[in-house]
Image (cartoon, rainbow, N blue to C red):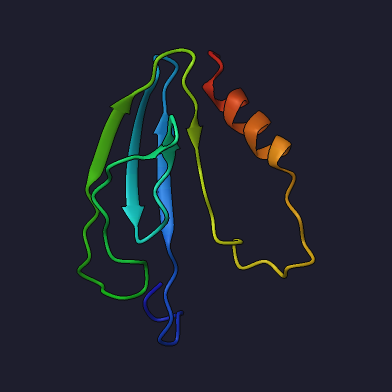
Length: 100
């Protein structure tokens, strides 16, 4: 990543959710997710592409069955004419939480 950015960088947030409601998040300079209208308190690592020695801490939270996490992005680098339906993102997240 470092060699391909040509002096730029990329933010990234990785979230793993299990069927019991535990979510584990690692953040590389990205906007933190929200729970109940409040930003989750995450340790924030450097964006990708800035340092080959960067390390990323994991933060773990437990969600009650009725709670939802809101993920935020700053456009994914897509042209402004490209729109991603929010319902698709929500349905994809809900499908990922369903037991196998």
